Length: 508
Image (tube, rainbow, N blue to C red; front, side, top):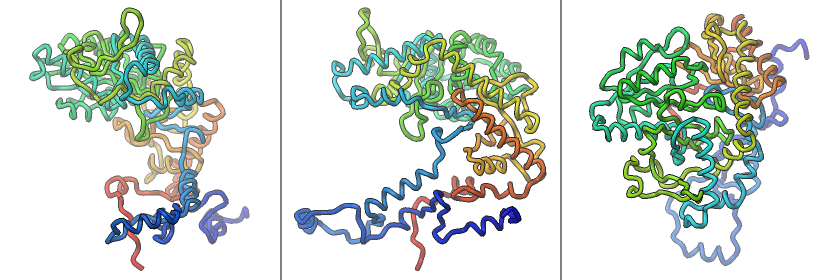
C-alpha cells in the first residue's frame, strides 16, 4: 500500500454504500422519506376519528420516516458535528472552552430549570437571589455601580449600553446634537452595526502599526457631536489597549461616554477592573468568561455593567435587595422613572445565570484570576511556537493576550488562509477564525482558551506547523483539502449569499 498515491488510495477505499467504517454517509431527510411511511401508529378509534376530519387537497411535502429511521438520521448527522467535547476548538474571538459538568447539574435542578417567568415573585425568591448574587459578583469584578441582567447576548448587551448612553444624553438635553459613536478598527465587528442600529452615526478610528487604537486620530475626532466610543479591550487583534485610561479620560472631557465590548473579559477577569479604566458600560458574555454553553442560536446571556453615570438609566426589570437583604424585582417605570425601558419581557436566562454563578463560586476570586492568566499563557505559548513558521504581524509589540493572530504572508503564490483552514479539518480540528480581524490581510485568529492542556496545544501546533510548511512549499494537495471530511471543500460565500432553503425533488 505504500506505493499507492493519495488518489489511488482514495479510489481503492471507495465502498458500495458510501460509508467508510464509522464515517457514515447520510442523505437529506427528504431523500430518505416516503409518503407511505410514518413513525406514529394509530389505534382503531383514532383512525376512525381521523376519517371524519377534512382531508388535504395537496401533499404536505414532509418526509415520512419510521421511528428508527428518524433516530438514525439525526444521530448520524450529529456524528458529523465538531464540538468542544471532541477536541480543541481554536475559534478566535469566540472563546470555545470546556463547560464544567457541575454547572450543568446545577442548571438542571428543578427549582431553576422548571421556573416560569410568570410565577408570582413569592414563589421564585431563590431564583431571584441567584440573579442578585450573580449581579453582585459582576459589579464587584468589574468595579462598576450597577448591572442590567436582562440582555440575551453580546450584541443585545451592546444595544443596551448604547440605549443607556442615549438616555443619559437625553437627560442632559444633548441627545439631538451628540449623534456620533467612534469605533476603532480593532473593535469587534458588531460594534459599528449596533451603533448604527441604535440610530447613531459611526466614525471609524484607524489602528496604529501596533494593532491598537491610534490615539492621536481618536483625540482629533472628539468634539461636541460625539456621544461616545465603543472600544474592545483586549481588542480583536488579541492585544490590550494600553491607552485605555487616556482614551476614557479624553472622551469624558469631551462630554461623551465609554462603551467597552466585554467579549474578551475572560482575558482580564480577576486581574483588571474595567471601571478603574473609566468604562461607563460593558457587556459580559457569560458563555465566554464564565464557561456556560455558547449561544449557538439558543440561550445566550449578555449582562451589562454600568458606571454611576449610567446606572440610573438601566433597563427594567431590575433585581434589588432591601435593607434586610430580601430580594425583589422592580418592574414598573413608576419605580424607576429614569430607566430607558425594557430590553425584553422578563428577567434574563435563568440557566445561564445558574451556570455562571456556579462557575464563579467554584473558582473563587483567586481562581478567576487564574482563568485569565492561563488563557493568556496558552495563547502566548501558541504564538511562541508558531511565529517562526507563520507570520505574526504584531508579535514585535510584545506578548498577546488570550488569542494569537497570524496571517498568510509568506505562503506560496495561489495559497491563502483558507487552504490552511481546510487542511486543519483533515487533521481533526475545527479551523480557527479566518480573515478576521480585517486590519490584517489573510488573518488567522487563534484562541486556545484556558481549559486546554499542553498535550492538546502541542498536537494543534504540530498540525499547524506542518500545514504552514505545506502552504509555503505550494503543496497542491492542500488546495483541495479537506480530503477526509464527509464533504469536500464547500463554497461558503455562495452558500451564504444564495442558500437553498427549500428541497426540490429531482425530476425523474
